Image (cartoon, rainbow, N blue to C red):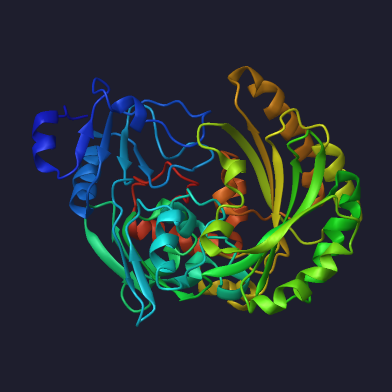
Length: 449
């Protein structure tokens, strides 16, 4: 391993390089999940693609592992590392919207809140994360669920092109015609193939006012609510998105709720939502017109930065009464009031894209299901992780072997393969071409063929 000359490196970059002795190091090594406490050897606070190239070459030549931080929302903490190089993209915030061509180009340090503010200035939007402070980079590269996915597809379905720094330090452009194999792999294959320094998206007329909010029922009604949502959403307009949740209310009661976002004509919103109110007797409603940017923050409270997080996730084909009952019974035992179950209904435009068109494969699932453990006190780690693992062990035998790659913990290669299904072999071959030494391995890793 080469000795790093920090003074020379700092003279080469436009951004900043932080060592453990620097005052700012302690804040920048931290990421969203408070359970992650790692100490990189260096943090490159990149200002542009040139800095990313230097950071990659520095780590590669020194034999150090690389962690890439866009928004820093990796559940297992892949955004940072011990004794390696953390390539921090959070300073790369450029966004340019072309309202005539309906395109937006954004750098990887942006969150969806940043992106939405810029695009909504023109009444436009792309499918983006349901947590506003999630980074655009990681969410897009894994597939990209959001409130617009039923109407406009996943984030990867809106990706037009990308600039990528590869493992050899080269900068390549990828789109449907230029490096099309890399472009295919980027749309769902995660950070396995390089570091994207620019994303170009299609944008669509959305809002600025949509209709949304939450209708909540007692948790005991879960056996009616989950099957009811599946039945109604199978016939619903693509303008309507729903996210079924299990939460603890501010007064301490467990509840099952349906969050809505309707992006069509506002005069049609009440009629679209009315059948869901009849599934059971609501105990709370908060519904009405709101800015699209506000709808994009509806779930932020469930993902407060610095809390401690642990998850299990999977796709769900059949939200049956039996599954709903098992899930509700387990959620009732959650030791933390911050924990939640989150189940967006998919299909719509997501399912109309052929499975082989992108690396994101599981397009026909009805729901994606996330069991989210969240708490604040480190002394509660064991109780919360144990609860979640035990509930997952009861649920897993009733679920298909298919998972969303962005919602994996460190669960082993078999689970990574289950995220890609038949796409894994092609991804592995492309990985060998662009990263044969597996330099980019701190991720849900696809091994080179």
